[in-house]
Image 1 (cartoon, protein in one colour):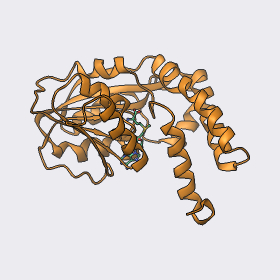
Image 2 (cartoon, helix red, strand yellow; image 1 turned 45 degrees about the horizontal axis):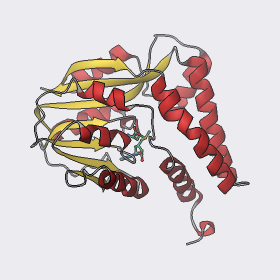
Image 3 (spheres, protein in one colour; image 1 turned 90 degrees about the vertical axis):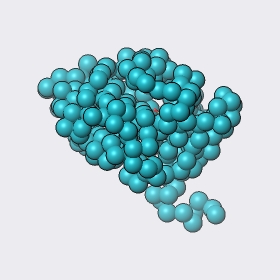
Image 4 (tube, rainbow, N blue to C red; image 1 turned 135 degrees about the vertical axis):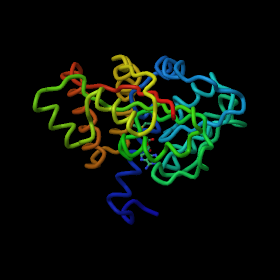
Length: 257
Ligand code: SAM
């Protein structure tokens, strides 16, 4: 099918997906931070069943896999990401216990109380933090853990420019104490909360995008959608550097009671 036959929306999504297949991570994070969050999770065994929701191409999942011994199912909406995820699992020789599956986080195919751990880095915003915590809880065993990273405000007040940007992009953004209260209200003991360090954005998310930007702009020279997408990415990055004292990603780890 040629691109002219596809709806603009479909073409946009394909372009954005293609762009993100060129980078190791699709959101801010790092192997160190994944391991720090994992250090708060107790009781995993070779029989444990884990899910990584909104796994993308699996950068963080392969780190989880290297430090746990149970079964991990990665779930993502986009088939291109899942293909790369499964290729990554083969490359790291964990394909017998780490499998990517196409699916939507608002309609997960797990059984009630099937999982010991639910992981989700930079992805729960797609369903909303509160809704995700509430809806996914049934899939966890009692005593099972959830670990999610989520954009959050660091202060009660902030400059209008960044407030407006985030209220437009993700109105559910909130302060850390409010997110912790939401976790507790959803039926978890809030076990740990920590802010992702700056290098999760700069070194692991934005720096790899610079090479990807060049390849992409060359391939799609003159394509308005591609140029606008890159311009938006660059704008977001500038805002991050200007306002990083006011917001960032935060890991929230909870235990189902
Ligand atoms: N966890 C990865 C990481 O940290 O690199 C990816 C984070 S990326 C910012 C968000 C991911 O959520 C993307 O891979 C996207 O395809 C996925 N996603 C978006 N909507 C989804 C949905 N409804 N169900 C499952 N995955 C979804």
